[in-house]
Each structure stands twice: as structure tokens, then as C-alpha cells.
Length: 225
Image (cartoon, rainbow, N blue to C red; front, top):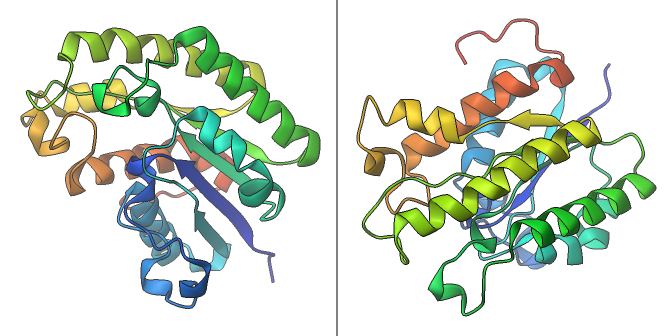
């Protein structure tokens, strides 16, 4: 029988999905994956390909920036030793006033991201990296204005593309996917506040992730995904 393939997701609230984080509640398997795109990926791949023996972990934490995920490297990566590590980071490094701090900035964002990946690879040399592109949609709920978010996140998007290329990671483009979807339905159908996806938006992310990762997952027939 094939060995398990452990896939770990990390990021901010978009990944977190209000999952249970208290170690004493790990027995409650209904709430470990949250209700984000990570849950949808787990549900789709687990139901369509049970013979693949995929195992999934969600370590996203609401409000996290790159530096916060980096700070949990020992706990989330070196301890769990995933075969595939997937990252979706950037929105909390942006210009939101509610963060009570300045935007991280493209140079620091990229430097911290690379330092984190370097340290992971130093300890887990065979891990396959997946870098998801941060995204933002136009919505009146955004504070400050959408133009500020778009300008900032656009720089992070360029950095994630470069990082993925430099580290041989799978890159999952999301902004264009959402932009195309917004030609069919209004942005609030996909993200209720321009940052956090609705169920429909999480489904869009999940399907794009699976398509982009089909090669490393050895999926030769994507069925209806």
C-alpha cells in the first residue's frame, strides 16, 4: 500500500477558516480543517482519490503575516514534517488600518518569505513548496481604499511569482482567476469584503489549487474538479 502524502496548508484567516486550535480538541475531527479552501481541497481530493492516501493539516492563523508563520516554523513544519507545504500569505502584510501597523512592504515581505523557505528547506530538503498568490477584490468595505490595497498587493503578487520560480515551487495564480470570475458575478459573490472569500470564493481557490498541483499530486485524471 502507498504511504501517506502529508499536505500542510498555512496562512492567515483565509486559510484558517475558524479551525479549532486548542491541542486538547484535536480529537474533534469535524473542526480541524476549518471552513476554508483547505477544507474544500481535503474534501475533494479525499473523496475522489482515496487510494492516494492523502493526509491534510491546516495551520493557518487569522491575522498572521509572513513573519508570524516564520515564527512557528518549528511547531508547524519541523514537527509535522509535511511532504507538501502550501502558503497563502500577504493580505495582513498590506495597508489595512485595523492592523495598527504599517504595511510590511514588498522588499521586507520577500526577504522574510525567502528566509522562512530557506530554513524550511535546510531541515526538510525534500518538501515540495506551493506558493499561492495573494489577491484582493474591489469592495466598499475595504479600509483604506481599494486602490491602496491593489497597489500594495500587486507588489506582493510579483514577489510571490519570483519566489516560486527561484525555489522551484508550484505557483497558484489567484488574482486573474478572481478577476475572470468577477466578469460573471459581482465581486461580493466571491469575497464578502474584498479580502475574505465566500464559500464560492473558497471553492474557486480550491479548484485552482488542485489544477496547479495536479503534477506533484500525480493526478492524471481530474474527474470533475
